[in-house]
Image (cartoon, rainbow, N blue to C red; front, side, top):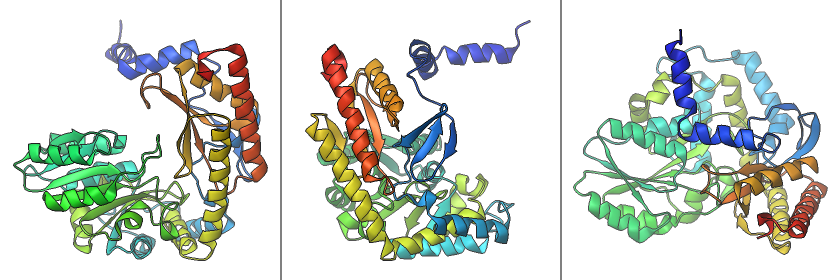
Amino acid sequence: MTLPIQRLYESLRRNGVARFMEHFRQMFPDTHMKDLVVEASGPGRIVQIQGRRVVNFGSDSFLGLDQDPRVKESIIRGVEKWGTHNGTSRAFSSVQANGDAEAKIAAWLGMEASLIYPSVTLANAGAIPGLVTKTDVIVADEFAHNSIQEGIKIAKSNGTRSFLFKHNDVEHLEETLKQARPYKNALITIDGVYSMSGELPPLKAMHEVALQNDAILYVDDAHGTGVLGKNGRGSVFENLGTYENVFVVGSLSKAFSCLGGFIGCPREFQQLLKIRSNSYIFGGPVPPSYLEGVCTVVDLLCSDEYERLKSKLQSNLDTLVAGAERLGMQVLGGLTPIISILIGDEADTLQAGRFLFEQGYYVQSVTFPAVPYHAGVLRIQVNANHEPEQIAGLLGALESMFDLAKMAGPRLAA
């Protein structure tokens, strides 16, 4: 007898992305390099994967604070003070560290208030549907992060209409808002930094369009948090000079190297979001020890130490981008610590990642469906605690990879 759960499995594995990914695993068992297990980590950017010690260029701990003794010590002290977790939904109670961290984040950003969620994904899943009603609309950039798209799906199921506009196209944004009429309010959802391309949105122009069309900007700045703007406040204030009519979402797990996500907002919205965000009410909160770590990181960002970290990060990034361009590679991004080198063909992209791994460097081979078909990239994440010789070593490995591809004449060199 075949159980229903077995039939469900067979149905799901033949469907869409699951079928595509299984096909790739079978075709490229040695080069696929997904779902990896890191067997050991540290010091610096060294990790052990598949028994091999490699330099990790796949970490989004951009400032290297995951290895900073001050951050680690504050988290340890937090465990000793609060235990391992909060023990209740924040709808009932929050530890003092939660309030302290939210106040510090708001003061650092220069906003009135902030609200911490368990992750950026849960922030978008809770805040987006919580900020709109059936009389409103959501207008999203076509390349907005998956978590924004998931938040929009929830809002749509609640009766809110949604529309897409062409990537970073201000004119099409304005046209889309006009086509969406009538509505009471519109929420324009965009990324502050588009992580696969490194592109920044035209925030000033979009802000003007919002003000002229009964709309509010909602910016997921997860990839700008900690690495763009004064003291790492991100892309929004740096480009707009104001937070007027803007919600800002940021990450506490990337450059912060802790855990969670947050939304910066006017003070009156903090309490409103607590009531209207299901992921805040029903999601387990960030463990108190990590909130102590968040407070320590904010203090570091507001100190003279930040400029030293940012200078080291920028130097590493500039060196890598300039070196890759000298090799004739097509580099996407470079304004933030995520850069992508265009390879193209899926098989070539996976083989390129495996080659670099065998040379002692781990980077992420990104293929369809995360990027368009035949537009595979090597996604490299630069950290402040990468040493100059590690950057030079990766460039040497990229050069060898490129030379071998040209000698063999495959698609990789095209």
